Amino acid sequence: MLIFNKNQMRIYLNVLRTIVLKYPIFKNIFLKVENLIYNPFTNFEKLLNYKINQSQNLYEKILGKIRNDDKNYSFKDKVILEIGPGNTLLLAIIFILNGADRVYLVDRFKQIFDDLLNSILYNQIIKKLHTNNHFHDIKDFQSIKNKIRYFSKNPIEAFNQLRNESVDLIFSNAVLEHVSELDLAIKKISMLLKQGGYTFHHVDLKDHYHTNDKCYLNFLKYSERIWNFIGNTNRIRYSEYISLFGKNKFEILEIEQHKTKIYIKNQRNKTKF
Image (cartoon, rainbow, N blue to C red; front, side):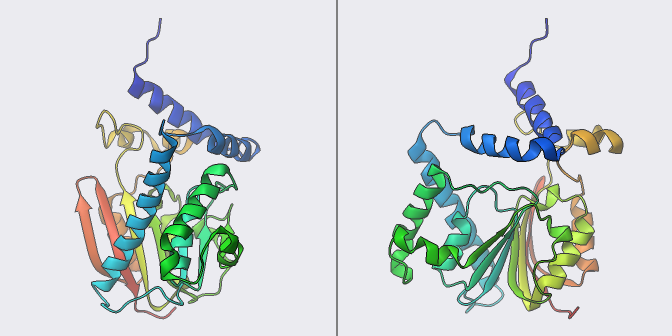
């Protein structure tokens, strides 16, 4: 009789999820069902607080790091693009509430749905930040939503919906490690950024299946053929990220490295393409 521990079961479920998402006939149904049933928190209030705090912290982190280079920088009237927003408009709303002119969201899947959780999140964040802007309650949500455009089923490496040099900030959070054609993705980021624009990326380099048992590089043991079938990351290493950003003419303003994690922060495009 086979007996699986909790870590092994989680790994097998993650592998199964990755395989299912490779097939369009199952992908959209699976993501919609997952969005309805998945909840890592048993307490709904804790989930709401976690989502809001996580989004606000990322917003503050990006703004703070850019201000290390430009102390007067503001998102007022800026055009923002997020790669891989996950399952909520929450962070895009925070940018709009802080003055951004427009926010574009690009994702290779469709994961954002008008569900109860998101409705409550949007209401709470608008009430929390209303003193910073002219939006006062959820009745104004359509005015905010008109400034946000969601391009689902659009991987960044093949994204052609915006003009070159039309975006002030492009960022992602634990997404680039999942991009299969990273060179093309970084080239696309470079093309979309305005002269002097910024890009900020948190890249998670560790094995996404074995985090609980701390086998952080276990995924390097698989052959390319097997990993292309079961894997959900590109397995590109730290030095290759640095090389690819350099190749695409970015000035690297700051890098934070934490063991198997890196942050590539505040790349500024100084070359006209």
